[in-house]
Length: 118
Image 1 (tube, rainbow, N blue to C red):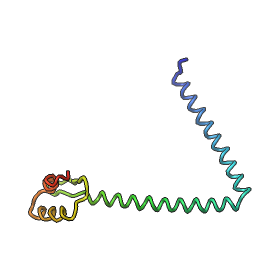
Image 2 (cartoon, rainbow, N blue to C red; image 1 turned 30 degrees about the vertical axis):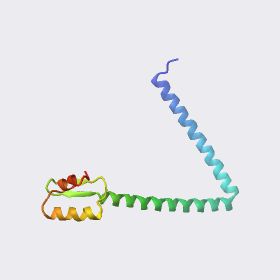
Image 3 (cartoon, rainbow, N blue to C red; image 1 turned 120 degrees about the vertical axis):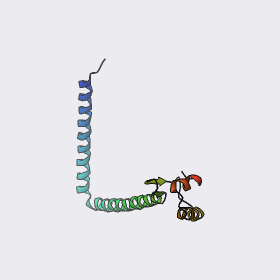
Image 4 (tube, one colour; image 1 turned 120 degrees about the horizontal axis):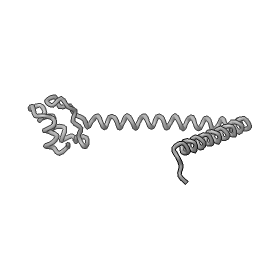
């Protein structure tokens, strides 16, 4: 049997309505359970809020670390007016060599290319 586009839209609409109805029924059951068991519901709610706060704090911390690590791999080249991104962060020895060569007037892009970091 061949389905038309209109038939597919009707099926999608019907499935979405059924999912909404099931979700509403589950929500009603959850609310009635919370009303029947207020001490357990309060404990679960408190734990859930604490877990959410801890997870949020962890995600913010990790994203800040990632942003800082990415920033440490970017260098501005004033001769080409571009930002250059390295494959990895420079080691201490490479930073000293980079600074020395940059002060001598060499292009940032050329320095990083010769070091094999681009």
